[in-house]
Image 1 (spheres, rainbow, N blue to C red):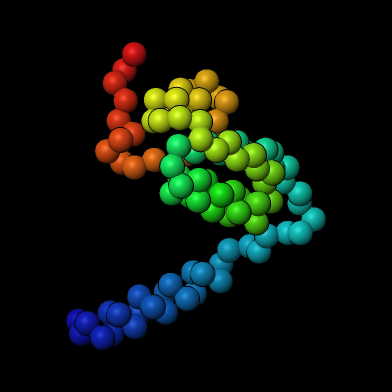
Image 2: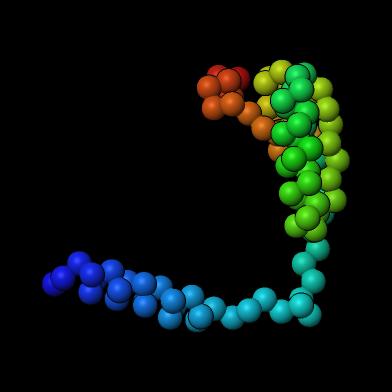
Length: 99
């Protein structure tokens, strides 16, 4: 089979299937709660926390940004205890030993 025909078939199938979903109804109201966003003690973390907050606000959530909570351990403990819902972390520094 020619790759051009295969590609055209794939694109046509994707277009057809994309029209098969039901549009979201404006009548349904989903209650969106408050999201607490933590940040570490440096400027980049403050900026990323507020950027995350802006995105969540645009999606309909109420946000509360807690700046400068501390390092990785403090924010991670906040996640475990439920006092922080989300914070931005670097992959390598987010590794925590089981305690």
